[in-house]
Every structure is written in C-alpha cells, then in structure tokens.
Length: 394
Image 1: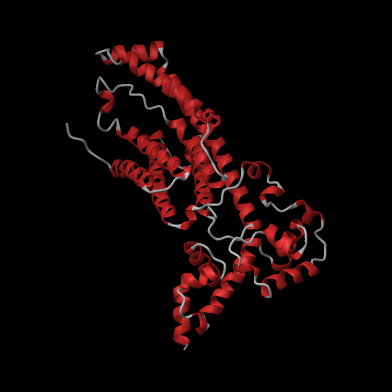
Image 2 (image 1 turned 90 degrees about the vertical axis):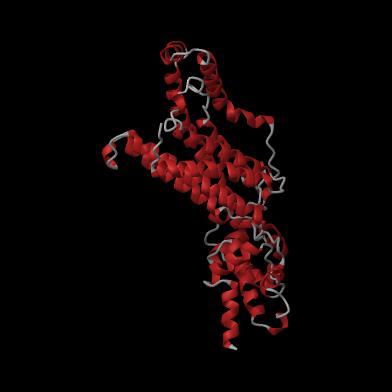
C-alpha cells in the first residue's frame, strides 16, 4: 500500500516530531522552574493531537488492534495552557493537588475511551467492534460531547489566561522597573491571535458562506495548521526563555492576581481617578529630583512602592503624577532615564573600559536581553549601532 502525503500532512508530521523534540530540549535544560515542565507537557500533547490527524492517512484506524485507540486528550490543552500562564505570573507557583480538578474532563473522556478500547480489543470484526462501541458505549455521542466540551473549555481558559496576563502586565508596567522580569508580550499576542482565529472559525461555522468554506475539512486543515505553528512557536520561545534571563519572569502572588491589592505593589488606582484635577507639581518636582539628583533609577529593583517611600507621597498619587505629568507608566518612565544614562556613558571616555552590558548593568538594567530590546525601543537603534555612530562622529 502506497501512502500519498499532502503538503499539510508533511507539515503536521514535522510539527509532531518538533513537539516531541522541543519537549525533550526544554526538559533537559537544567532548571527547577515549574513552567518548563508544563510547557513540555503542552508540546507533547500538541504533538499527540497532530498524530491524530495522521491516523487515517496511515490507515491506523483500520488495524484491528488499533481501532478505537484511546486518545481522548482534546480537553487537556486548555487547562494546561492556563496553568502554564499561572506558572509564568504567579509567585512560587507549585502544582498542588487542589489543581487536579482542572483535569477532571480529560480523565472522564479518557476513561470512557479506554473502556471502549478494552471492550472492543478482542473482537476480530470491525462490524462487531462498531456495534459494541456505538450500541452499548455510545462512542460517537461521547466524542461529540468531548468536542463541545473542548470548545467551551477553550473559551473559558482562554479568557482566564488572557485576564491573568493582562493583570500581570498592568501590575508590571505600573509598579516595577526591574528589567529582568519578562513583560510576556509574546504570551499576550499569542492569546489575542488565538482568540481572533477561534472567533473567526466559530462565526464562519454558522453561516458557512462568510469564508467560502464548503465542508469541515477546511476547518480541520486550519486547526491542525495552527497546532503545528503553535508547536514551533512554543518550542522556539521555550528554548529562548531558557537561555535568557527573562526566564526569571516576575511572578505575582495568588492574592495579587485575584485581588490586585496594595500588598503586591499595586498602586491604588482609585485615588488618582477621584483626584484627576489634583495639582501634582510638588510630586513631579520630587520625582525629578529623585532621578536627576539622587539617581534612583540606578537601583535595578526600583519599584513604585520604593519610589513613593523615597519622596514621601502615597503610591496612588505618585502613579497618577507620573501618568499625568510625563505621559508614561512607571516602568517606561524609569527605563527612559536608564537609556539616557547609557547613552551619556557611551559618549564618555571614562567608561570606555566597560562593555555595553557592563554599562547597562551600572545604569540599572539587570537583563542583557531586555536592555537591547528597551534601548532599541527608545532610540530606534541597537546599542551596538548607536555606539558605532558615536565612533564615526569622532
């Protein structure tokens, strides 16, 4: 029997292999952080899902011992991805028993799949297997329920993941300046892109003519193409995060994520909303003095709480003053001073004995990867290009 592969089949096969390899690389890299274990699990499950679409191509479903092979794992990805988001944003994240309930749906569906497989395994004929699977165990009905459950779980966990990411980023930009903490922009963009794709596929499935789809095979191709892209993206991103200091993603406490209270350095955003017309001139003067005279931005772990304490004003008022007076959030405001200090020192012969990274770290940056990204963001050039321009001027 000859097997003919389409372009999609080849992409899916390579993607499945990449998922297994990527999971192995992430696990093998020395790190005790829980997010890498969850990421590895996600990559393996995505690879297995890709293998599901290949089963008909190789006629695996037609093999007597592999018919009704138990692989009811569709409902596993949504909670896994949510827990991965939690591991990136939660302080001291630990996978405890109280999180096992997230996997109740996949346990139930997989249990049913195992029962179907066990009950039909010894039957020689396909017709007999079918009668047992459908007549007594309602295999297709349960699969339909699994598909519906996967849809709803994906929607719920997508929302929870996006909300958690947004809360984390809000906290980070409003109250933290340390550049070793990942901004998780890639995660936010991935969730937004996933949401858009999911919405398009869902809406187009109601009036099929919106996208000109005539059968469900197009949906399947798009879905598995996306799974393959996701495997590559998470594999590469996981590997990059392992190699950079951004693996030290800031992790909020559970209380901070749920309550966003002051104990986690969340500024009291209700205060500036009430006092929108307040004159912040005194606070702005104190802020400028703290940065230009006392150079507080050189402190790598400078937070809004520490800044407010240094100038003697409430956190909420300090946050509102920075937003109103400078048009920036706390993180961007502090990093602006750091970038300017780096530029100043690059143009000063007294610092020629230091490397770019050495100067950056002396100016308050504590992550090389973040320094290069932030410097380019503020200047439009990489630090090396900027240094070369300075040298040409001389």
